[in-house]
Image 1: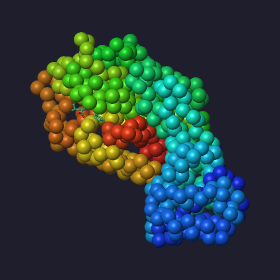
Image 2 (image 1 turned 90 degrees about the vertical axis):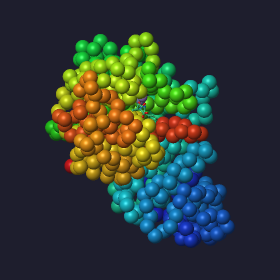
Image 3 (image 1 turned 120 degrees about the vertical axis):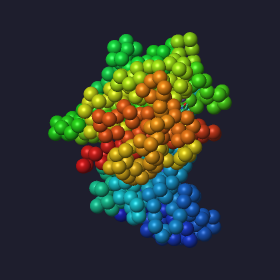
Image 4 (image 1 turned 30 degrees about the vertical axis):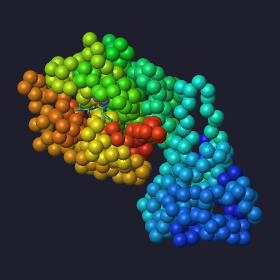
Length: 498
Ligand code: BES
Ligand code: MN
Ligand code: ZN
């Protein structure tokens, strides 16, 4: 997929298979739409009057309009002209990209990013556009007996003034790299759990390190994990015949001056299948627990983007990965394990396994003396109940870090919502037999999960993202979303500028 800018002055002479223009409700035309309407002697206004309400996300194709060189003019509805929002431009570009993929269009030009947006810069618009168009070209066909037809869309260009083009270019480049990171995260999420095992995730990290020279991968096996004393992580791993992996993927920027700041560490939950363990989950929908490694996938996807952009900041991705299955060797309710930190944990529910593997990874992260640690996990069903599928849950005691992550989420159109993390909730984790229990009961289930993690993060600035509701879609559209790669990359971009 190629992204570019074009500054041709006469829109009606542009050669492309699809030329997209914005239209507002009440028949208001964007300047580009108006120019094409004049070149075509009113073809656009006539079509709009006949059958186009221009609601946000709507789309109408005009084939071979007279007086216009492009094969098609695509009208994209933007809603009311009053205050154009980035989300509306994104919906329009999503509709355009989906159409191009469906119709087998190979080249497209959009004029939408030239419009002023109330809540986004031109670079933001360009970044979001490239990301969404890249994502629209994703097609899962790894486990079908016949390959699906290849996506034809190969070139997507933004029509802008010369001054605008200069501002848009870095955004486009970032967006393309984010799209590739998102698509990697989606693929890892979508692959079946008998393919995407801990070993497979480890191999993916090694492959990334081969592809990008700023990346170095280290995959610790069972023996090395044992030697480190990750008793909590190992107690989950030992219920499965599939060997665990502890993955460390490190980006060292090629620019020497960028290596001075302390690294930012990302930690991703990599449960490649969560049956619940001895506290077995109910059958219906259990297949979706293949997505329980989406935190890990988003960390690997983000590392891919970071490496492709050669971000001027050291970033380290850590992924503890194993399966959570019931078996004769599995951990069980009542078991007490000793974490890498030395703190003991009474396992009251083996289905609260995410925190058991993350706590050891969070302790491991201390060795990097990080500027900040952000963990990403499909951690609690309670988070889906609290926030649905719109916002990821954000937990941290650090107000400045919270603000940075929330702002990054808004800017990248990959939002998070802050939930409380106060000491008053810590009492729920009391155990009569160990330093803490691994569950706090039904009330505030996402908060007590975050409280549990917080006990392993005293040495650095830390935030936790619960992506249980945002990492994948259910039902007919079942599939991984690649979230929160856009949020994480936006945060990291901000940390480089700072
Ligand atoms: N992976 C699940 C969380 C989950 C459930 C994510 C449903 C998305 C959809 C996690 O390991 C888990 O099982 N959590 C338990 C915790 C409970 C036992 C305290 C949960 O949320 O029910
Ligand atoms: Mn579980
Ligand atoms: Zn889980």
